[in-house]
Length: 415
Image 1: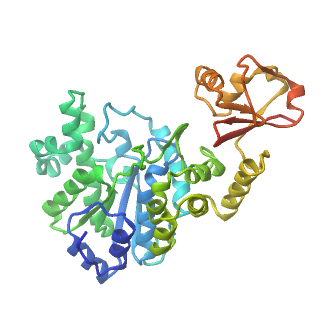
Image 2: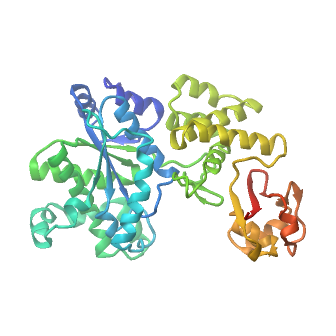
Image 3: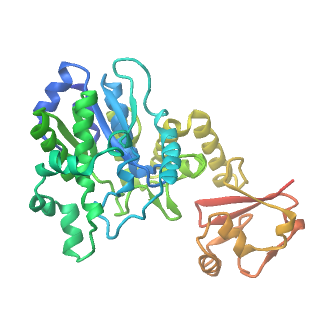
């Protein structure tokens, strides 16, 4: 990146590694120096929580507000009814209106932890594109908006092309998604003066479509800025762990497990993740990322604490660190581990079932394999008998189950 920005926001984006591409570096940078710039990211409501893969975009909105500008979080109440086909091998399952509303209520919880919704000049806005998409007249939309889109050009976008090249079906419903997303940008510019859309680099084609449509319909200049699609240094997609998605809502992934995900970051990713997911000064992020041996583990604890504090609060971060020290350094049980509560009516229960129900294995087959490969422990002692039954006497006090060295859960008797 050779561009030298004048605005604080663009400086942060470049210096901390948020920037993959921008439609007009200089134009956006100058707009950012002239006054408050509203910028948005859309979040489709495909689950009840966002996961760590969305955190880079949420942090971009946080930095936008911290540098004096106005974040817009756009809930995809309308677009979720269609489903974004970008870089997917198959069509998303269609959700009912009630399911979408329920998911939106879950997703909304996370944003107020990162950005401030108030009446100030740069107070964030929470919007829902169902507001303008649900009542569209199809024929009018085709005449007024559809005529500006070239099918030839739409077919050339990588997100669509990759699907067709693999001879995988792309429904007409999904094909409309990029038109609706472009229309969102036009409406946000028209209604709220929104000047920039942010997204992952897989959204580049959709963002460019919105910019082009807005220029054609109301002749306004707007901008797009994308972040890199993050993978960890070992090639895994960001936001996934061995036991599934790393959700941001506490009721779907406990603060302890969330903390542990960041504590388990590979050495090579520590500096990069500190710059993206914490607000520590860049020089300090670089210093911590360059540490080796035991010291890099201390840096990982700093990373876990910083990210967990932003997402779940300082008390949750402290409790998670205390639990981790209790579990790993002293061999104890810890106060904050994920806990499975069983009732007397459930007993006796097989150890295999407990390993599955506590989330340490996805199926009975996985649990049996874990035990056979000496990867499971009961109260820090290797489990060797997959046929072991646990009864009330065994649960007179909570038991600790472990899968490998880093994943643990408690099992306790109700009452």
